[in-house]
Length: 210
Image (cartoon, rainbow, N blue to C red; front, side, top):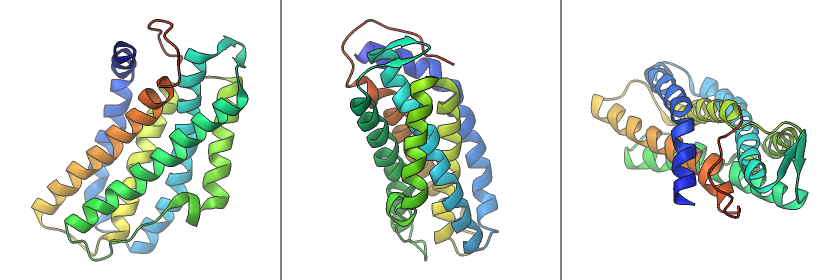
């Protein structure tokens, strides 16, 4: 299992780095935006993040656990549970809870939790179900993983942007940079790769789909 996860990490590393680097560049821009813009960004990018995450998570589970022949053939309830928990559960950690922790530790004035599947239930939950449905008919992991990382970065930045009040000292930018890396790299890797593979029997290493 550990070797399989390392194999998938190697295949997805370029996609993860590309999305994260772009997000870091946008961090300074957010300090110049009003809170309402950051809120709209969160309301847009968090559901899209969940959509991409559910596609990647369900596809990773399906490609290893199911028989791929045009579409996935497996227990649909398990596919649904793995895809939903991996996208909505870990997506909330990535986009809301880790950024919130960073905001509190750095003393940002507007630090406040924004839980997507509660506040935006009418967008987030259908997005997760749609991603799972897409993965059932067309399983793919690399492209949705890149989209997942990019959208997670933008959603996390938007959450931080709602807590900002103008420019920050350099040290606080460095602190936000560190929390952003953790918020994007760890949860995205866990939800797209490690989490679904926990439910897979050992069938040997296998390359991911596009």
